[in-house]
Length: 99
Image 1: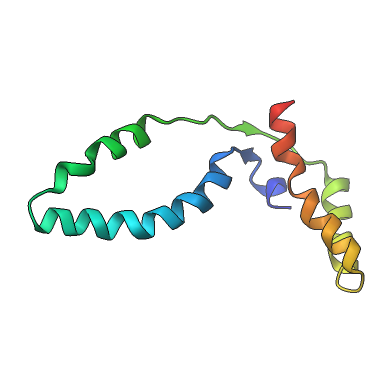
Image 2: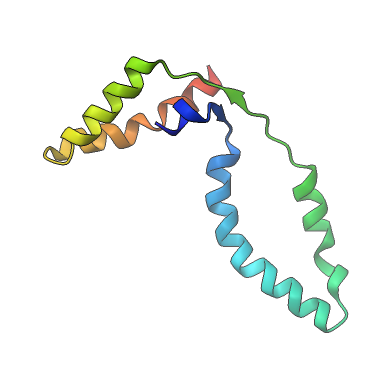
């Protein structure tokens, strides 16, 4: 349902989850390297990271799909299989990017 209000979607959204975990290790390591005057040791990683581009696209969700998803989400409190359907429905826009 977030796409109804913010239609821009990109694979960077999924990549952000992975990068958050890497950042927890990378940032203190770089800070330590700066303290011992080896701060430029990992600059090549940052250079490659900043060159990496993934472009997004706008996906507009019709109002009836938005309302259907909200109703299904509310009903899924009672039915476990419907909850799984709602979870997997969130991957449909990422599949639509490829098409």
